Length: 347
Image (cartoon, rainbow, N blue to C red; front, side):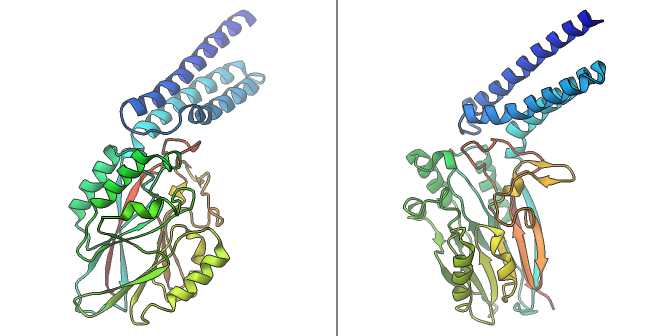
């Protein structure tokens, strides 16, 4: 009995090596195919960690039941390969549109609705099929206003002139009848000495701690409150409070800030819509549990999607791109998204 089991585990060891080699091939192919361009070695190590955990689990289980140890090893390792194929090659390019409606008493009953498109977390490495689909999608949706809530460069390419030029080119393609407005994201992804220059010679107005007041033809106003995100909650809350006081009281107030971490403070003010990103929805999610990591001081409290507290609606975008550095170059159960808001009267 021991000899057949020994041979079986040798075959499983060979399978382990084969699947690990396939992981490397999948990562290598991303760059060769022009899909994504992050670092190779660190990502391969991140991908290998779950495989190693499965091997340890299966070895422990085999002490109780050798057969179930081998079965669990095979099933989980093959499931991991399928997840990597989908997460690396398919889901990051499955750009989705989430549609929501905000009804406001600040909008007259006779006014036509306004279509506001929220984009976040481009994390440009190089322009790929994902960015092509984004521009096609924007052309189809025909928004009246576009807002962008930060993180324009991939963390692995912040200092790369080619990536900067590609990000500038993408921004230069964005236009909307009532304007395109943007804020800066996290300092590591949007260095203050680099990112503002990406907006030069584009139609995008970068709001750096200022309020843009849009006067709509129907006679009402929309105030876009745009803050740089420094991830200093106390200081950013104080700055928000000063800017909010500048917004006309009769206007529909929308906060553009990269992270959801100001929500506990913002909901105490007459801000009807708070748009942000930063968490990527976790980028990798587990069934029933959700995001493994959000990189936010609020943790899982505001990890993704729609929240309403008091009279403020918060939407945390899953974002469009991938983080960079050692973060996995994949998405699982968390496809990229753009969010189309219909702003209309509540009458």
